[in-house]
Image (cartoon, rainbow over all chains, first blue to last red; front, side, top):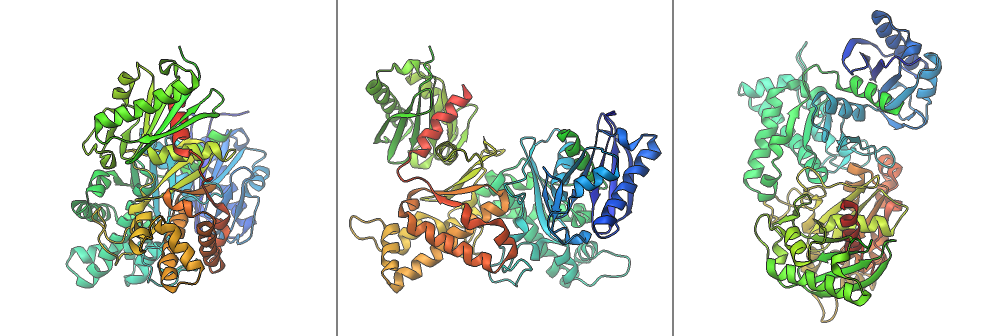
Length: 308
Length: 308
């Protein structure tokens, strides 16, 4: 019996982040739990979060309308299988994650999607009435998810939004993908971490922006090229997709307003020198993902429900 | 009285190319005529082509279900107005081309679209059953039109597919858009023309490929970087949109198989060094627009009809 309630999970390498949505799509519970690596571990971690979210709300998991799961890696949304989810310890092809979770949860309909795609869906829901946006995930890598005129753009092979591997500096260093100078070598959280020594208890991303704001020249020398690269990602997204909004997300977005202000500054300066860029009003389209908003798990829940 | 017949026009700087479609979307007439510059001239040229196509088929233009028009420049498809169509001598904002043509043709419904967008729609129709593709226009500039899961992607400001102004060589020369090293400085027909002396009666684009094939080192030195840039455009399109097909069109596509073979060669070599690129199977997705196929006017007619 379907209750209209659903659960969304964002399964990352360290944590499973879950939300419980009521029939009106309001978040009625959230939970984070450690991810156990490997296929069996991922299924156990996910199942546990679903059961605990339901238990706290007095709902039988078997009555859920659906459970949606966002995972890193290449996803076949029809079969619910996942390939190359290296961060989850599932470094093989076609793990049938959807069917395994369905069995573990007593037959509840399961939807599996790429994690950046569900974040884009969640951002579109939480930032409504916008239904045309890119979610730019700046984390370990750089990728984007797209909701276009209200529809998720997955792509023919599920590869839409792999913008981290568009070449940014042709003379740049070798990327793990085999190309040189890929955008994610410059615009990712990992790139920022690698370029700045971390103090205990502080994230590199925030430390470098604080030090740069305080006038530290070596921090400015790290921050400015990083901001240029993020602005290049925004330009790339607008020049190709012309989405109404570009939402900055991922770990780097936790820098908050200093990041947004710096990216907008670069976009405005470039627009000053280019009629084309000026006409595209890029600085006005960029925004931060709302701080603490569970975009990915909410998007996962919505994706699962839309499938049922 | 609507007959189910429609006319599509591709209005370029030198020629208006028109087709007459019957109710089954079969081409029943084609015509090319010179474009007269300026708003009044464009309306007169377009009206003449519509009347002559209808006259030859014994149809009253007032009975057409719709007339679709593809034009270079920024188009507002709702109002039918066109901005910055410099090549048509309409270098101003918001020329109400749709309403003007409607009056000139006795009230026939008019649809106005960007020329690259209608070419993408026409390519999707002529290459059916593909309904997910990019049309990569390699002409005076470089731009792409996108049909995604059967729907045209215009973008929020009608700017989707402005990939010619994604930066390809950060240290490159100044582009007319105000940025440096834009992709269209390397992958356009104009770029090829500028780099190769033209013999009388021969297009630069074909001349350089023929000379390079015959072993002319200076031609190879022009051809190879050009092909690399076209391949970069294809990679950019697949990494961002992951469309099922990328159709090479525009004047440069008249080079034909030598161009396609060279672009596929570059994509295959790059895939050899990159698991990511290999998994995306780019070489297999690229194809030429069918030689002589009137993709843009057919797409314009279909766009108009879908609007009625």
